[in-house]
Image 1: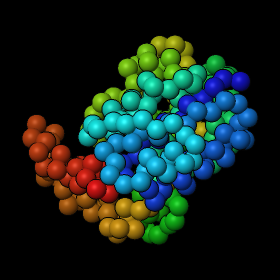
Image 2 (image 1 turned 180 degrees about the vertical axis):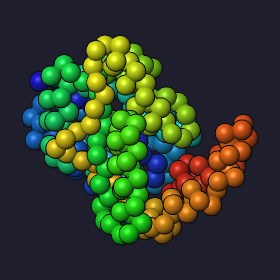
Image 3 (image 1 turned 30 degrees about the horizontal axis):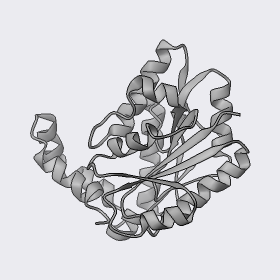
Image 4 (image 1 turned 120 degrees about the horizontal axis):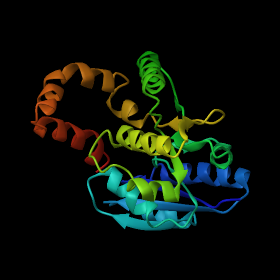
Amino acid sequence: MKSISVIIPAHNEEKYAARCIGSVKAAAKHYGGEVEIIVVCNRCTDRTAEIAEKCGVKVIYNEDRCIAKVRNTGIFAASGDIIVTIDCDNRMTKGTLKEIAFLLGTGKYIGGGAPIRFERYSVPLYLNDLLCRVSFAVTGLYCGIFWAEKMTFQAIGGFVEKKAMEDAATAKALKVYGKRQGKKYTVLRKNVLINSTRKYDDMGDWLYLKLMLGNIGTFIRAVLGDRRGLDRMLDKLFYDYND
């Protein structure tokens, strides 16, 4: 059985760290092989590192304001044959690691993502869910939990180091690399990512739909080369959130 390293980037996640790690440990037990869990503490000022250490996992540190660089810090410190990434406020279902190892073991797949299911639902969250499903189905660039062999991540240089949309860019890089190897980029069939709704809980369930409709000018200016407004919005949503 191949060894697995699970990378968990975390920025002030003391409320969620134990829950996420617990879900990974449950999946590791179901898998039965060697599983390393690495929490990458990114600019943490709370008890995230302390809680992770009490859970018995490896803790390393990164200070970049770029989630791709945070994930890469964990990936290149990992010892496992297979790399799996999951954000600290999310959870995996117990068969996740076993299914990942099985799919990679067939030799047909370069890696993949996971279907996303919210931990609670409302009308706007159903709409968000539908948008995710349609976009994944159309593009084939499944995200959520990322997984591939470590040598594959090394071959593509890790996650594409962008401040946002790094997930889609990395999925595309894996898909292109896989095609050259005669392998497909795919998605888990039997397991899902349980996606946290904490930002919706904090800022309302219409959050992302309002952002898309209310910041059309910001997006257009970013496409034309002026990213200042977009960078401020990304900082507020991701890199300054939870400070």
